[in-house]
Length: 193
Image 1 (cartoon, rainbow, N blue to C red):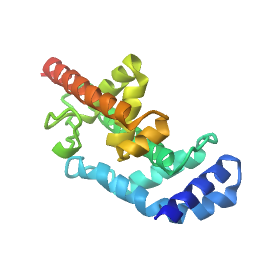
Image 2 (cartoon, rainbow, N blue to C red):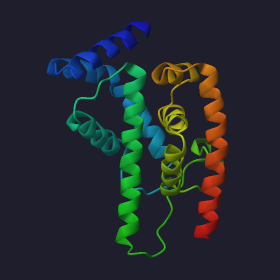
Image 3 (tube, rainbow, N blue to C red):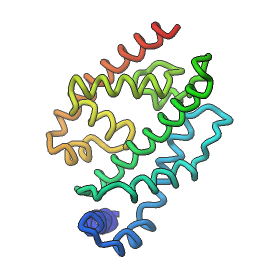
Image 4 (spheres, helix red, strand yellow):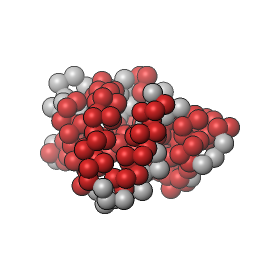
């Protein structure tokens, strides 16, 4: 596992420097974890969702490959960005579904209770995304902690490494962000009710 993490980091850095063959060697090493991440996201969606796990994974892959060269720091940074891309795809999909209904009562995308940072069952992915944007405006690092921990599935130590802060700072930011998001999502649900 440790050797694999170092190999992934090395290949990410080579890819960042424009080495296309590094991407070809990287994909088999990260595919299973990316698929698990996509499955994790899709498990939180309502049944009958028209987007499938593999389609989410493929769309995320295309966006990552087509994006301008990112300065990949390490494996944790790659998976955190991948999680952000998948979240953006699902939020974009939800917003387009709401737009198609032309202001009608759009069906909420339910997140499973274990995934909801705000702790409010039935929280809507769009409402959570709006709350995360508001948190980013208030304190971008706290938002990054949520994205890395909650959306990227990183540990406290991995998050601290990516953000170049102490694990204690990550824990404080995480505690504040969960409380703040819970309040914001609750306000949005009350306004929308």
